[in-house]
Length: 231
Image 1 (tube, rainbow, N blue to C red):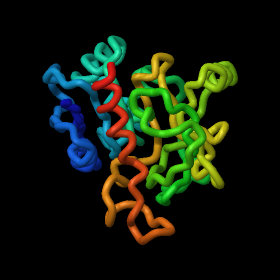
Image 2: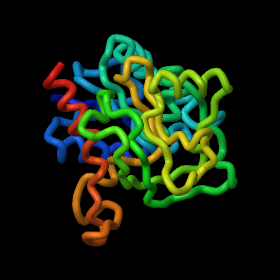
Image 3: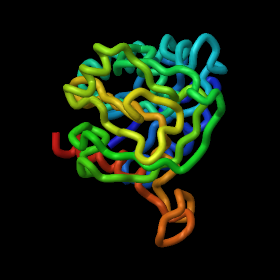
Image 4: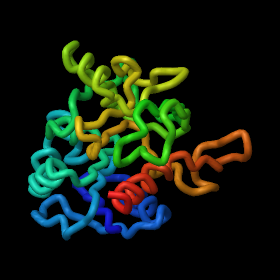
């Protein structure tokens, strides 16, 4: 399986996402924001960072990058797309997932190992988890507060599009503790925390077993492989 990872000006975690794909057993393919070619990949990742300096709004300019026309078309055809942090903001700006993002409620950049609850384990990126499972994933953002109007919140809650929810603490003031959502088809998922930083022992969050031993993020990448193989 070939998974494309798009690099935008200001991307910080594209190489980490490529490595996570490789660790999971798939082949990462480096894609460029200025191209109009997805190179026939089977899935796409929009990585974290500060694309185009987060000018206008985080993810706003990147959502209009040349390659995003291909991403939008592919997503609408059912290709799995994952947006991580800044990538989540791009998905929202491109209207591939509902909602939007604003400055964190406390007006501060935050970084922490964050507990999440899996609310939907049937998406292309979460089928290796169990609904209700709690996982620890690193989080780092300044504009991570998920917001939407009351009608949209009711819809994503009622239709199972809330994929992850913050547990114990809401780090950025997101409405309904929402940490990640999907499109209605479940092939497009966006979340604020960074699963690519929790795929290898020795480099992930601390656990009760050992320091830096958390690998709860690996399931994202094995999930998309599974969804492709079983499709």
